[in-house]
Length: 164
Image 1 (cartoon, rainbow, N blue to C red):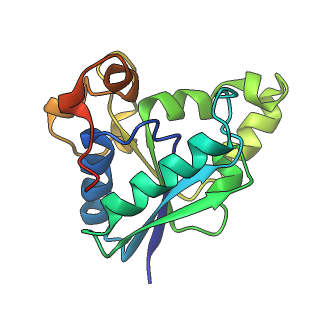
Image 2 (cartoon, rainbow, N blue to C red):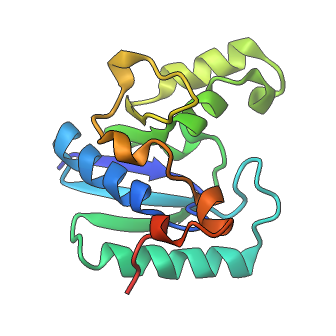
Image 3 (cartoon, rainbow, N blue to C red):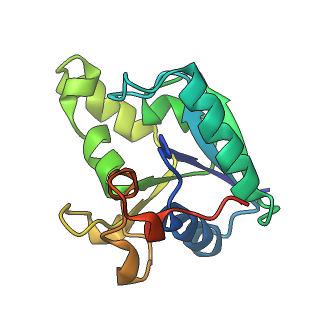
């Protein structure tokens, strides 16, 4: 069984998140993809326990139509820790840049390099304004490059994933 993990805050879940999950499943030949929510999301201190519960419910509703999609809640914050034991890790371009930022490793580039080296197979969903190495780029229609959870929170309801 080939299992991947897609860590994120999913605040809220968007149509792009689901398109990334669908593409990753096909592109990587995954039998299962876990949407991983951290109890304490790195760099998102404003997300509390009530928010976590709300996001878990939304992810579980959305995954009900995709039997290969699961939801996990983890204590780990760093992608390298969350991805431990998986065959592949899926992330958006914003997370890819976070993974490569020494700030999240105590400003220690060697610690960052060691963490990146531990990652399983990586695919990265492109984002219009962020550079992604072509070897890691997940095939995804250009329509999703602009979609963001921030946009949904700002009123772009057409970008919100249907969760019913």
